[in-house]
Image (cartoon, rainbow, N blue to C red):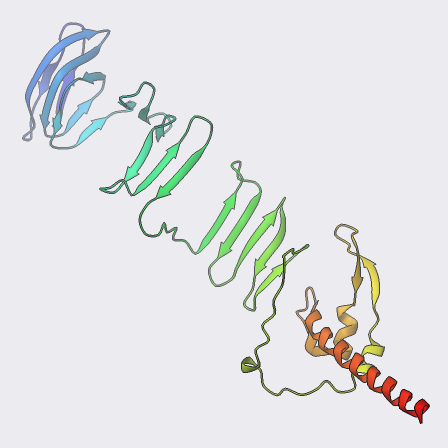
Length: 275
């Protein structure tokens, strides 16, 4: 049988029973108001059950299990209003503004919520790891996602509910406009093999149709080529299927060879005229 402490107007603190090795070593009653007991010290060995309110001032030692039956537990900080509460009705641990949760001997990890709805998780040593095979970051009302990450699949970033960035096994897919000061493409000869000039470049260019068009998503006007057409002429420049994409860098090499080819024809015509 656990130790039971009765709190009331008549008996400030009264031991009802002590069995199974449980005992109250010492207590000093201070006052009782409306069934609330206040003591300056409470040293308990054994299982203790508190069914009323008890306020303790001073150092108290509990050497076994402590049970608070359907009761809130409040830890009051030195600063006014900075409390930590176990809310029995909500089954949660509540921190007021400016109350911090710290881990580690040197307070290496800290979780904190300020007074202006600003919050932070601070990790001062090594890495902060979140271990999961799937991670989703959403709005506070659990509706719109702005980041999804799945192991061995992809990482997706959203704007206003629309996917804008996604990783693939070959690289990344960007939906919309990508802006940068410069874009450098890997072109080191040490990474290439089977290098040879583009054959019949002018004939290939003559088959390609440069077009103006509008993107269906936002009706934005643009200029370019159509991947489905390029696929019939230069299949090595078209990738994917839904949607199809074009490597425009490959078209640059083709156009360079066209200019050189045309310049050769111009030079030959000049020679004929001069002779």
